[in-house]
Amino acid sequence: MTVPAMVKPLSWGVKLPRFLRISPSFGLVALAVIVLLAVAGPMVSGDPNRISPAQRLQFFSAEHLLGTDGLGRDLFARIANGASVSMLVGLYVGLAATVIGVAIGLVAGYFKRVDSVIMRVMDGMMAIPPLLLAVALASIGEASFGMVVFALTIPEIPRIVRVARSEVLTLRTRLYIDAAVVSGSSAFKIMYRHIVPNLVAPLSIQITYVCAHAILAEAGLSFIGAGLPPDNPSWGVIVSENRSYFQSAPWTIFVPGFFLTITILAVSSLGDRLREKFGG
Amino acid sequence: MAQTMQVTHTMQNAAALTVEHLHLSIQSAAGKLGAVTDISFDVTPGKTLAIVGESGCGKSLTALSMMKLLPPGIAQESGEVFIAGKPVSGLSDLEMAALRGSDIAMIFQDPMTSLNPLVTIGSQVSEAVRIHQRVSGEDASARALELLTLAGVSDPQSRLHQFPHELSGGMRQRVMIASAMACNPKVLIADEPTTALDVTVQAQILALLKDLQERYGTAIVLITHDFGVVAQMADEVAVMYAGRIVEKGPVDQIFARPAHPYTRDLIACSRHGGSKAARLRAGLKLPQIPGTVLSFVDRKIGCNFRPRCADAIDICGERNPVTEQVGPAHTVECWNCCENHTTPSNGATTQ
Image 1 (cartoon, helix red, strand yellow):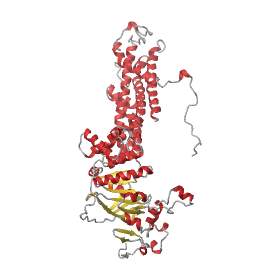
Image 2 (image 1 turned 90 degrees about the vertical axis):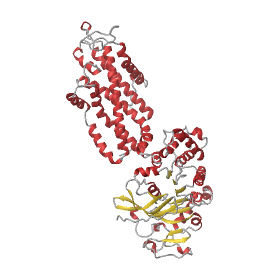
Image 3 (image 1 turned 135 degrees about the horizontal axis):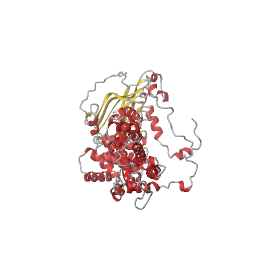
Image 4 (image 1 turned 135 degrees about the vertical axis):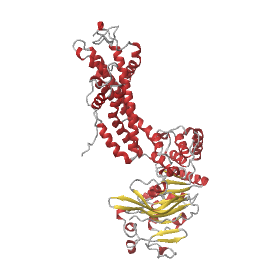
C-alpha cells in the first residue's frame, strides 16, 4: 500500500451555489421551529381528527393554514401532531439506544473476557432490518407507540455499542485510568467517573444520526401501515392517506414530505456541527 | 515446569514491603519464559530502595506484581509479596483494591496523562481520599487542600478548581504525589517519577518525596535508570539485569565499590564529566554500554550480561553466576568480581 506524499483533506471539490449551501445555524433554527410546532402546535390548532366533508381538499387559507385532506381534516393540526410524534420517536429511540448501548459498550470495552461474545451478538443485531422487525412485531401485537420505539431501537443499539466500545478501549490505555486502579477505585467507579464523561463528545454525534434515522424509519413504518395507529397521525400516516389525491391536491403529500425532509436535514446538520466542534 | 516453592513466611522484621523469591513468567509461542527470576528484597519504613536497570530488565513488572496488576499473559510462578507483613497472593480482587491506595500507592512516569482532563484537580485528589475513607465531601476537599499544600502545589486553594491542562508538568506530578499520599500509604512505588520532567524540576520533586517520606515514614520503591536520582534518593540499591538482581547493597557501597561490571557501566553512563557542551568540545562521546538486554528467548545457561561484558571469562558462559557477599549487606552475582575484593567466595551454593 502506498501512502500519498501529501494527504489532502477530503472534500467534495465543488462549491455549491450560495442558495444551496446549508448554513451552520440552519439545523438549530429549523429544529427549534419543529420543536415549537410539536409542543405548541397541538394547543393552538384544533382536533387533528375532526372530519368536515364540506371542506375537503382545500388549498392553504387563513382558516386552514396548510389546507385540508380528503376527509376535510385540518392539515396544520395533523402536521403539528405528526411533529410531536416524530420528535418523541427520535428522542425515545435516541435515549433508549444510548442508555442500553453505552451500558453494553462499557462492559464489552472494559472486560476483555466478554468482549468478543458481546460484539458477535451485536453483529447479529445489526443484521436485523428495522422495517422487517417492525412489520413482524406489528403482525404479532397491536400497533402502539412503545412497540414502534422498541422495533426501531433494537437495530440502533449496535451502532452506539461500537462507538462506545472503541472509545472505552482507547480510554483504558490512558494513564489516569491506571492511576485510578492503583488508588483502589472499583471498575464501576472508574467507568462512571473517568470513562463515561469522556464518551459524551463522540457519542453525541452518533446519537443525532440515530435520532434522524429513527424519525425517517418511523415515517416509513407508518406509511406502510406497520407503525402508529391512524388515529395518532404521524407524517408517514398523512402521506399514506393522501396518496390517491396526489394529482388533484398534491400539497396534501408535499406538506408532510416537506416537514419530514426539513426535520431529518436539521437533525443531521446538527450532528455535522457537533462533529466539527468535537472533531469526531 | 510449574515448580511450586514452599514459602515459609517467618515474622518479618517490620518491613513495610517484602518480596521473597519472586518468579514471573511470560506466556509466549515458545512456551513459558522467565521474565523475572528469583527476586528478593525488603524495604523498611522510612527507607528507599532503588531498583535500577535498563528497559526490559523487569523493573516495571516487579513493581506491577507488588500491586497485583500484572498484565495478561504474565504470571507469578512462585514467590510471595508481603505488604506490611500481609501476603498478597491469596487476596481477592476486592481485597486487593482495598489495599491499593491505602497501604500501597504508586506514581507514574508521565504526569501529563495521569490526570483525567475532564475532572478538576480538587475532585481528583479528594476522590483518592474518599475511596478508602468514609468522609463527607467537605472534609474530603479540606483534606485535598491540605495534601496539595503538603505537596508544595503553589496557590493550592485556587488549584482545587482548575483542570489538569492549566498546570505545568511539575505541578501535575505534585498533584499525583498528593493523591498517592492521600491515605498515608506504607509503601509508595515511584516508577521513574522524574523522567518526564525538566531537569530543574526533577530535584524539587525528589526533595518533596524525601520530605514526605521523613514526615510519614513511607517506604519508597524507586524505579529508575538514572544513578543521579539514585544518589539523591536511595538508601539501598538493587541493580537488575535481564530479570535478575545482579547486585544489591547500600547506596554508598554501590557507588564506592561497584562489584558487577554492569553496575560500573551504568554509573559511568550517568556520571557526567562536566556539561555536555564541554564534553563535546573535548571530543568525548557520551559513554554507552554496547548491545542490548538479551531477549527472554535468548537467555540460556551462564551469565546474561556476558555478551556485553568487557571482563567476561570462560566460566561466565558455562555456569550461572552465584550470589556472593562482597561487603556487609552487599551481594553480587558475578564470576569475575571477587578478585577485586577481599571477601572470599562461598562457592558451595551453585545452582
